[in-house]
Length: 397
Image 1 (cartoon, rainbow, N blue to C red):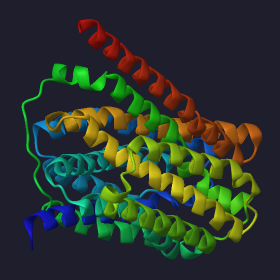
Image 2: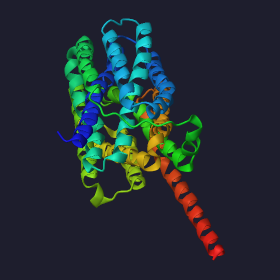
Image 3: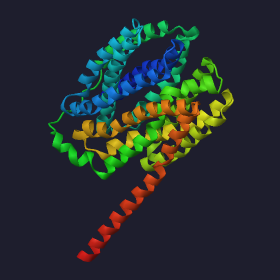
Image 4: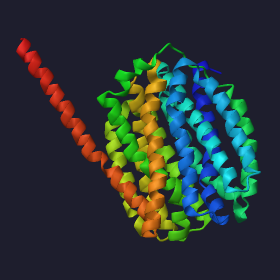
C-alpha cells in the first residue's frame, strides 16, 4: 500500500472509529441518567466536570505533541479511555460517575487533540485533496452511525449492553493506535509560542470557535432530550436524525475537499455560510413538532456545521507554523472546550429557568450570529492596516 495513502487512511479511520464509540456513548448517556433518576443539575455538573478536565488537559497535551510524536500520546490515551469504558460496567453511584467523567475528560481530550495535531502537521507535508475529504468526514460519519448504533444498543433502556459493547470496541482502538504515523518533533520553548498565540489572527480564530461551538454544549446536554420530550419523538426517530445529519454533512464536506481547488472557497467565507444555516436552524427548532420538521431543520443545520468544519480544518494549518502547530492549535481549540463547558452549564440554568429545552438553543443561536459583527470588525481592521501600508509606501517614494 502506498505510504502516503496509508498515512491518510489510518488517521482518518482511527478518528472515525474513536468517534463512533464516543457518539454512541454521549448521545444516549443523558437518557441513562434520566432513567436512573439523576437530578438534571447533577447531570449538568458531570458534563461540566468532564469538560473542565478537558480544559486542564488541552494546552499541555498540545505542547507535548510538539516535543514528542503525537502517536505516543494517543497510545497512552487509548488505554485510559478503555479503562473508563470498562469501569462504566461497574458504576452504580453518582460518586462513581464523577470519577469516571474525570477519566473521560482527560483521555478523550488527549485523543481528540493528538489526532487533530497529526492531521494539521501531516496536511502541511501531504498535498492530497483526499486527506481533508477523508479526515473531515470522520466526525460526521461517526455521528451518523454512532447515533444508530447507540439507539440499537440501548433498545428497551438496556444500557448495560451499550457499556459492554463500547468497551470491547475500545480494545480494537488500542491496537489501531500503534499503526498511526509519527509526527516530526522540534525543540520549542514555551516563550516561542507567544507571538503565535497572542496574534490578532489567533485570537480571532479562538473567538470564532468559541461563539460557534457553544451550541455543541447545548446539544450535548439537551439535543436528544429536546427531541424526545419537547418534540415527542421516539429514540428510533432520533437515530434517523443523527444519521441524516451525519450523511448530509459528510457529503458536503467530502465534496468541498474533492473539489477544493475548483471551488476555491475561502475559510472565512465558509464560516459566514455556517453561521447563517446553523444559527437559523437553532432559532427554528421552536417549530419542530414531528419527525419531518426535525429532519428538515437538521438538514439546514448540517449545511452550517459542514461549512464550519471546512473553516476549522483549513484555517488552523494555514495560520500556524509546523513546529508550533501542536501548542498553537491547542490554544485556539481550547476555546471550543471552554465553549462546550459554557454551553452545557448555561443551558442547564436556562432550561430550569424557562422550563423548556428550547431556551438552550435560543441562547446558542444568538451567540452564533454574533460572529457576523466580529467578521465586520476583522475586515475593518485589516483594511485599515492595508491602507496604512500603502500610505507608508507612498511616503517612501
